[in-house]
Length: 365
Ligand code: BGC
Image 1 (cartoon, rainbow, N blue to C red):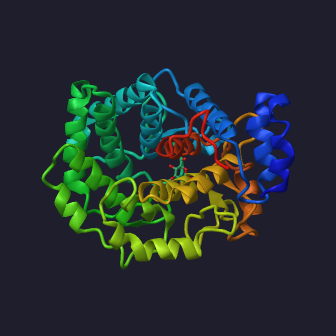
Image 2: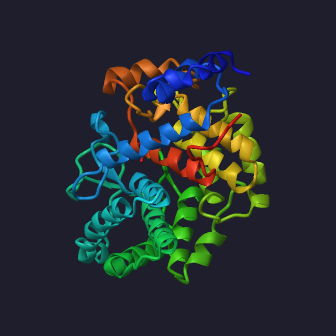
């Protein structure tokens, strides 16, 4: 049992709420696997909902991080996962506000897209083209968007007609372009990425598009470069079976999970030193939850929660374990502190918590 947890748990009742939520986690963060009360996790959930609501622009979009200049845009990938998380925890309006924003961005470019222009990976919260140095041709966010809209509609028995025209533009776009190389989740290199195909498959499949099966058939995990985003092929996009995913899972568990249970992006990651990414720790936990490895899933949730600070913020990545520590300085000199908070981290925390049905009464020990 973790000594610092035991020390604090007795005093829990006297502690201010943020101490329950933040300090206990912070105290325990070096142990990487401490015990935590369900009350603490439920508090972290509350903080996450608050950060997401506070971070949502009146247009419905989210800046990826409001404190980190290079992330002053709304990514379709982040936004779709965030909206899905908000839908899961019952914030129907928040999820739908994002879908409204996304539908407007897409539909207003209908003719240009038909004429061969790409839909960009990110826009300003006002829905304008962004000026930044990253590659913009990424298809996964649009598949994830369609998948999230369908899941939301089913979950809350909501109509999708208001987005139908934009959905159609997106379906046509993905069905036409899915076999083109595009940039990966991390915007690092262009190729045909299994994780991208999986999200497109899920998006097309969500609206019964006949091209979905061809996309699925093109997914080849055997030759894929090791990357934790590959988890998305099985969870949540169900584009491969658990059996097919097994060898990749073993590689991820052996090579990308640090001894505290945090998950790194890929073996060659140098961005801010290549720390562990909370969204990926959550993604692996989500997979564990789906295959019934609940204890391990809960450990992942705790591993994320230990990084919540006194503002209730979760970062994009953490520096306790780094794959390329010498590179951290380079990025600090270039862009300052890494993204913190990252709205997507909060969303993935909520998603995993909802998979585990974390509530006020949950006991984790
Ligand atoms: C990540 C993307 C993410 C973006 C905004 C980038 O550093 O590589 O996956 O969408 O940040 O969070």
